[in-house]
Amino acid sequence: MRLSEYTDYTLRVLMYCARHRERLVTINELAEQHGLSKGHLMKVVNDLARQGLIETTRGRGGGLRLSKEPATIRIGDVVRASETDFRLVECFDASTNACTLTPDCRLKHLFDAALRGYFQALDGATLADLTSGPPGPESVSGRPPGRGKPAVAVSMPTSTRPQRQAKASAQR
Image (cartoon, rainbow, N blue to C red; front, side, top):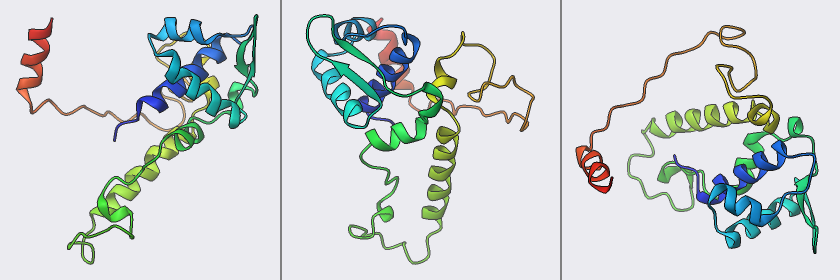
């Protein structure tokens, strides 16, 4: 699963505003800081304002700021509001499902459990967790490793597409 650029921009705007709570932030500043299009940022900001997550002030000396405390903004809620499609496989949508395996397939249940776990992790993190203090060895919950649930080692799969590595090397 991959988040859309829109969701990425949404999270960046919120994180930047959370780190600069003492003042108004401008679209120009966000665009320069993150190397993003002002047009896309305007759409994101308007949507966040409609959701009540930020407040905007127009005109000279205007800008935007968080309208809620960062600790009350759950990352899972932000992702749900900005993403448009969480159908990981065709059978997640009964109205368009044409898969012949559906009656006996257990894959849907596996992906459904994975999606629930994904959102459980995102719902366990707030904007404050992502922006307070310097980044370090702490978990998203703000607790040092080893407290609470034991850590689980997760390894990333190695690339099965060597052409990506060759292509990336050629672009350097």
